[in-house]
Length: 195
Image: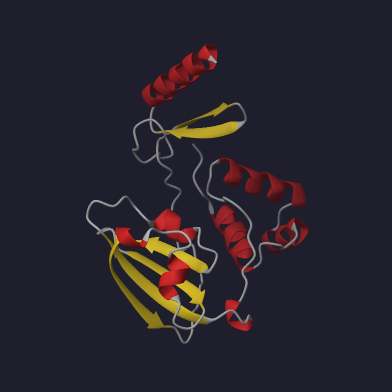
């Protein structure tokens, strides 16, 4: 499996600055052709590094309530709530820490945090809740010198440059070793035969 090179990183940095930047503009800045940039972006999408191109809305410019930082601790027996919290329309970002705490930024009508949370989460699943008023938020995703490290879909290990890929029904999968690839492909084909 091919790893990220300096050209991939520069393409990603330029797209992080402006996801609508034309490939011709990127190509000019990194001394490649636009089709070569397109091919690299497509490869990064296929491997799952680029999941989507999104719009970054400055919610502070919208009148929809006050911006708050919410920290909630689920009850011990509750399932992970981060996905449910993330579906609430007022939530901009949601994170789950290693201890299961959920942290989210959201815009809510003044004094209406619980009601807003109840749009996606059963309140009886929450053990504790704290809310802080936000005065400013900055969201600046970056790359640094990170290496590509997808998870093997078969065993969960990190896929290195010696890893393998397989494309099944148009979707690309990454594997840490030939054994994992063979096992996954065999299971996949058995399931397909049974359908």
